[in-house]
Image (cartoon, rainbow, N blue to C red; front, side):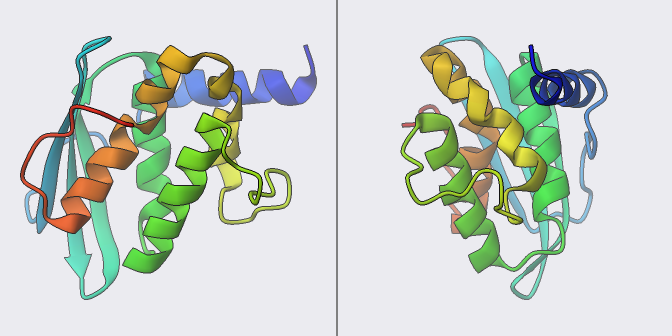
Length: 153
């Protein structure tokens, strides 16, 4: 196993065990709920917007290490970004984990940063939903969609 692969696994395990920005966000302006019925992952994403900028973000819920790590890394990646940049990151991450990433430079993409760790998930199709649940839930929150995310297709 390469050193890089081991580092990626450690990053996922660390964020899965000790998720960042976990808990309620009392003054959230946007919220959404996500549920992956295939494995039982459940997540609520809370966002506080300041104009077009994500000023604060947190999540609550339970699930496998991949879903928790993805939600944790999501909160770190989008805080302080404008909505357009968040949506761009959403598209890149989902393309990366689904294997539809012909235009994503995994190694040189500054925008993806630590999120490139999820590239390996594409080898396990059932885990793609785990890795993207928080992202689809965030997308719904920012789009003001009240219905819970039940599919990450």
